[in-house]
Structures are given as structure tokens and as C-alpha cells.
Length: 364
Image (cartoon, rainbow, N blue to C red; front, side, top):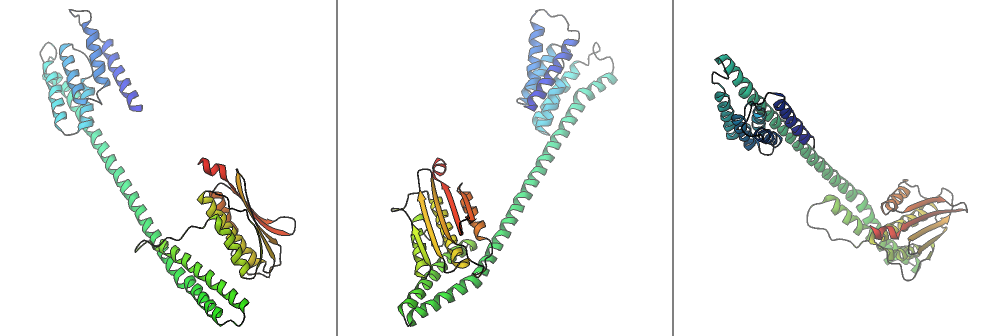
């Protein structure tokens, strides 16, 4: 838009200079209006058709002096084409125009001719070539900047990949090793247990440890991002909430689950988020308030899905926490457009309540 306005302004300036001068008499009344209109269009369209506009302006100037505009079109050809044959053709055409005006009746001496040659040919060509080189330099600098940005992004990706692999090594060396030992010891305990209750608890620990190892291996393969495509683990769904409650109850916790039958059909992102919310809330309840009764409630309507996990408040005798559990739950709920409330409910219980909008998810 700005370029078009500049072209229009230049064309109007040329038109004004032409009309301000003394136009010679013509045999036909329409001759001068037609010539002025052609010159105006040539200057206006010089960027789209640089060399044709230049030749047209020269032809009109030869037939109807003293029209303006040939220097403008010559400058445009030089600035757009650079040191190429269109610029040479335009220079020859403009030089021929100046020579045609060098007759004694128009240009009385060689000094005036030389001045006209410099002003009409040399200056527009040099200015146009300078602008062409400037545009080429800016394009080269822009390309270098874009290349530097691409290289910076590539280096950033390499750094991220290296950090992911380092994290994967640390997790494998520390977490996976520890969990493997726990699972092996639980398996040995389930075989050597002297009573059925101990054997059952040990088996639950072994199964949980094995499941944690499977999920951890999948995460490690994703973090490493090399080698063959890892075997994808099934995504947790809303139907797995009951299994979470049953596993914790089998481990000796007092869990009461109030779940609908059958489970509501919700979008996969909401199902995964609800599963992780219940999983984290049950873990926190068992860790910070061991031995208390835990209540899991799930309800769904046409508009939303509500998940609640509550347990009585207890003293700080439980295991210490890192403080990231509630943050992670809030992030998961926020990504699905829901809301989360976690904390004392005023009735002596610690309650985690997550509400997921179902209609908003479907509309997306």
C-alpha cells in the first residue's frame, strides 16, 4: 500500500510539472491530453513494467517535448534490474533522447549537452544502481539474520536433546534402579510370606512397582528419543479410576469409591486428566494422612465431569512432600479448560475437586 501511494505521488508530480510548463500547439486537440495520460500511466506502472514503461515514456517524450518522466522511469529500471541488459537498453534509450534534443535550436553548446546528459542519464542510473545494491545488501543481511536464527534454534534443540538424555540417564540410574529393587523384594516377600495378608500386600506392591517400571521405561525412551520406536503404553482412561481405588484398598488403605455404572464417555484428554487427578490425590492422601478413610466420588452430566477425592485432615506425621502435586494437578485441569480446588473444605476434610467442561471440549 505504501509503495502504491509513492508511485501515485510521483506520477502526479510528473503530471503537475508537465501541465505547469508551456505546451506547444498541436494539430489535434486531443493530442496533448492523450500524451500526458500515456506518460502518467507509464510513470504510475513503472515498478510493474519497468523497461516497457521506460521505452513508452521515451517515445512519448520524443513525440511531444518537453514532457517529464523519462528520468524517473530510467531510475526505476536501474534500481529494479541492476547491472543487466534492461538497464543498458534504458540507458541507450535515454541517451538517444538527450542526443535528439542536442540540435542547436534546443541545446546551444556542448556544456549544456553534457549537463543534460549528466542530469538525465548519469544521475538517475547511478542513483538506481545504488538503490539496487542497497536492496541486495539488505536482502543478504536479512538472509544472514534468518540463517543465524535457524542455527540458534538448531543449537537450542541440540541442547534440549542433550538435557533430555541426561535426565533420562539420571532417572534410569536412580529411579528405575530403586523401583526395580522394590519390585524384586516385594516379589520375593510374596513367595516367602507366612500369611495370606502379607503375601497379598507384597503382590500388590510388586504389581505396582512393575507398572511403574513400564511407565518409566516408556518415559525414558521418549526422553532419549533415539533407537527404535518404543512400545507405546495404553493411555490412562476414566475407566481406570476404579482400578486405582481397588489397588490402594488392596494395599490396606480405607477407600470408598462412589463411581457411576457404566463410566461416562468423555473425550480422551479429559479422561486422562481425571485419571491423573485421582491418582495424585490418592497418593497424597495415603502419604500425608495414612490410615484415614479416603472417599472418591465421580459424577457427570451433559455439561461437566466432576471428580472429588477427600480424606480427614491429619497431623504432619505422614511422609514429606515436594509441593508439586497440586501444581501438576492444576496444570492438567487448566489444559482442559476446567477448574481445580484443593485444600481444607471447612468440614474437617482435605478435598480435591476438579471440574472438567464437557461441552467446551466437544465444541473445540
